[in-house]
Length: 124
Image 1 (spheres, rainbow, N blue to C red):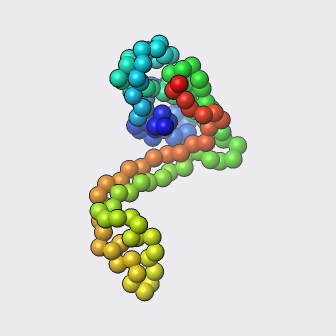
Image 2: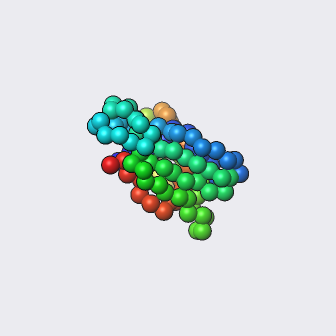
Image 3: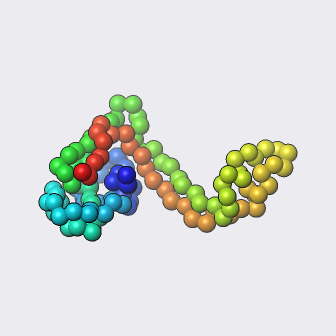
């Protein structure tokens, strides 16, 4: 399920806002949704922040809230795509094993931010 992926990273950083973001999941029916998304369009999430918390509203009138108590929010991550097979790069040591890794290059990469929330985001 790709409903929880959206373009743009959102941080808990003191900014207050309400925005709609498209997800990576296409709507495939004619049922009415909270944000009135049409069939063959991307589902959306409504994101509200008061500067310290984030609330996510879903197309099916569900919601989830940021969990701040354990510090699992604003976690930065990065995804890399290499020019070769990643299986060949798992064992890199000082003896020359993994030389393919040093000859590889990053084709593309992306960054993301991760937050722990109190509910499962479902579009159905």
